[in-house]
Image 1 (cartoon, rainbow, N blue to C red):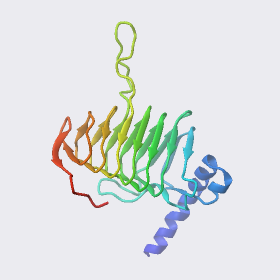
Image 2: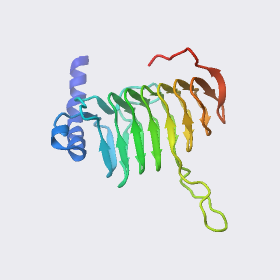
Image 3: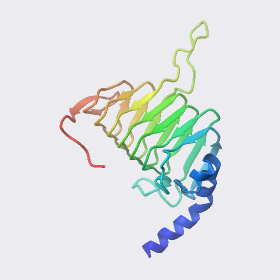
Image 4: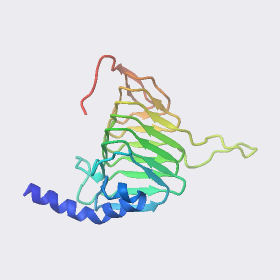
Amino acid sequence: MKPLKKLYHYIRCLPKTVFFNFYYFPFKQAIKLPVIVSHRTKFNRLKGKVYLPDNAKTGKIRLGFGQVQVADSQHSRFIWSLEKGGSVRFGHDVRIGTGCKLFVAGALSFGNKVTFSGEGSITCQNKITIANGCLVSWRTVIMDTDFHAVTDEQGRRLNPDTPITIGDSVWVCANAMILKGVTIGSNTIVSASANVVSSFEGNQILGGNPAKVIGSMKNKTFDM
């Protein structure tokens, strides 16, 4: 039954998968179907540019698949919203799970072997870079903007959108939030429900609101 069920789901995803690949990529790249898109995907905006590795293989980028404990994978929708002037760059083996939401008007970049488990959201108005080997758990928020401008008496904006950079091998745990202007160094764990509003060097464990260093990852790694 499991192989038949898997085949059924892949058949259902074919229309949106074919559409997405041929909409964004040249024929020689699109024909390989490097991006597999769940049938539960909602395309809010189909603008901007999407970039892949030159040697991207079939199905190595997956959008809207998987199961997580906090989501009904039969109904939870993946949302794709890429504005004109925005861009999304995928590395190899990127998986953005069920119910995730991407709202991009700036430059969003995923490295190799990046996984979002489900129900997470990314809002990119400026620039967000997520490096290699990152694991992002459910109901996380990564956002490089306040949306609403705060201005002084001269009309100058005091809270501009500012980039987020997440280094290699960072584990962002459930319900964590990473806000604008933050840089997180490599080999770091962001604990569940942490609110990261300032930058940290690598090899740390972060937790709390606002996040602070609560432990060390020196000479330690985590399992993907």
